[in-house]
Image (cartoon, rainbow over all chains, first blue to last red):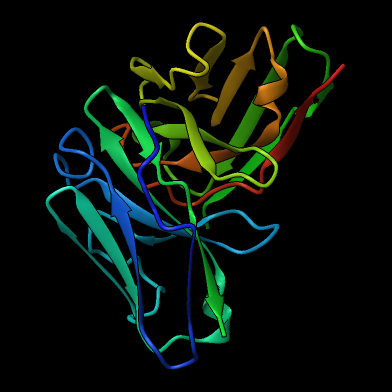
Length: 110
Length: 120
């Protein structure tokens, strides 16, 4: 159950757009649409931002969007705001009947 | 409003046991899978275990298989994690998270977490 691969950090200026990638294999990201994304602010519990590859839960800003191509999922945040600064994690179901998370990406809003 | 409240964390020595509990409210508990996810200090999220709504199916991460046991009591709306043979590397904040009908992502919401420290 190897972790999904995410960039350790990304940054952007307010108003800009950034994309965080999440790379797995055909046994996880590429094989199932059970990919989700979580936002975690320091000292807080994670919050679901995207589920089933590209769906936004009620209450999540439409500035957050996501997609998947082959074994790589992507989260895009448009119109960056200071409050978006946080850690972001992807997760996926794995063929071995388990769940795996990405290593996490620290987003810095410059 | 869905609420999850973990309890049972603490400081234990290597090799000892600990039992975590998560009390759920605000939804039909038996209809949803429940999961435990942990986060070691300064590290990322690691899924630990999941259990189906009926309790008949359980999954574990390789790192805890054979040492941890997940269970649930649908009459009390609680899910538990029995942790045996604890190791220093099990030190983490343990979160309880509501799943969907199967043991797959997404997890929403999450509890506030309970700290487990394994140290001699």
